[in-house]
Image 1: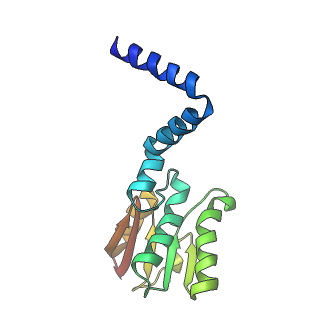
Image 2 (image 1 turned 45 degrees about the vertical axis):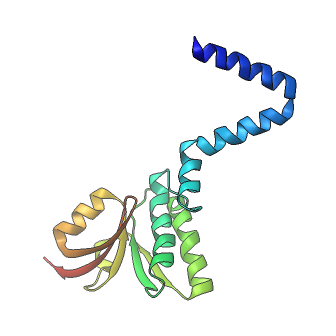
Length: 152
């Protein structure tokens, strides 16, 4: 009953104030929406919603948090080549403007002892842990930033 009364008064307010109140209400709803609130809450940091955005988020986060680490690999297996576009955007930007050397790899043959690797796919991470002893340096949402210590 209370909700109905509040809704009635809200609608009366919108009716009287026309578009001004609609803009205010829209902004209030947009800020309270979960993804937008998380952006606002974390000082304009965007959190990935889709699995394909995980590695791009990790590349960007590592560049910000560890600016001295400029060479590492992204271990990513995709069904379609277009799935690497998002992470590739961040890699190409960092390579061009900040002299990073980041490679996207899709198999374990390109992994060497001492390599720094980003991996967000659970199945690949499990397989990596079965074949190598690893040290997890940091975690960004679902992505792991790790160092390969030795082969098992």
